[in-house]
Image (cartoon, rainbow, N blue to C red; front, side):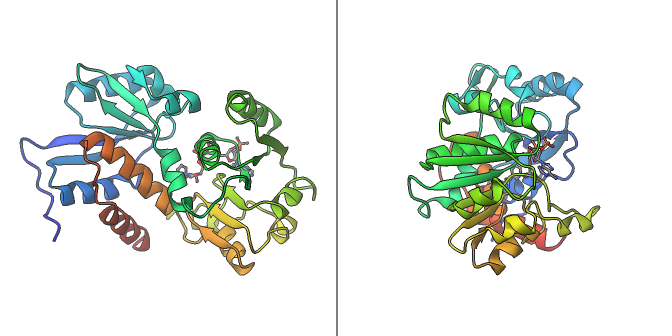
Length: 299
Ligand SMILES: NC(=O)c1ccc[n+]([C@@H]2O[C@H](COP(=O)([O-])OP(=O)(O)OC[C@H]3O[C@@H](n4cnc5c(N)ncnc54)[C@H](OP(=O)(O)O)[C@@H]3O)[C@@H](O)[C@H]2O)c1
């Protein structure tokens, strides 16, 4: 039985920094875990406008904050406010976790890669081919995960040539197998790559819905020709977690593909962050997943 949340004069804070951040699901997951672990902390969504980020980060350190998640739009800019960065965060240019350091300052790292990989572990083999839709922030963590899993070919579809070129320039030293794919929906290129891939990952927000925008659930990032190129042996992974399933995953399942949604990535990046903040290797991942799914099902 999970003890109830009890806030007292000795309760410490942890939280997620973003702007806006009221939609974040991290408080639901992290507070469920903190209660289960018996830690006298509370995890809050902390809005930080870009021009106030440095003040907020310094103030939280001064208040003895136990740890922070970082989300849009600060994953890149917060790196400059750290005392030390993990090699992974440095390579990706993206920080989603801050850990207070002994002696002061923040250690910045990235657990999105670990979160992305978690539901794929044991189901992929080195030498496989992937197609990634979108070349924004989360695509960097996804590509790093695919490299770690040993994918030999990673086709990256992007609608803006300059964004694709910038991505390739940032990553070319550590992702020689990256093939930029201009995404023009003209019946060439992407459909061919999809037909030949073992794993398709959507990192665009297309198909993501919310209570204020339920109609967005009808959208699919692939057009009819691209969907028809999907083979039943291809695993389709949509990192979106609302709705479940997304239109893309529903279409993939109809074609016999195994599908993976974004909930486990979200749970596992949060669990990895909590291990770093608490220093405990055994964190209640089941309680985090249960709280998240309960919350999503109630929306
Ligand atoms: N499960 C998880 O733990 C997790 C973690 C992180 C993110 N996510 C989800 O992943 C999604 C993307 O997040 P992000 O941080 O990567 O966003 P982002 O940095 O804005 O990147 C989004 C990418 O999608 C592209 N895109 C947007 N609309 C498109 C369209 N209609 N057609 C083709 N490409 C389009 C963007 O292209 P342009 O640059 O041309 O706009 C950009 O390359 C969000 O839905 C987010 O909730 C999930």
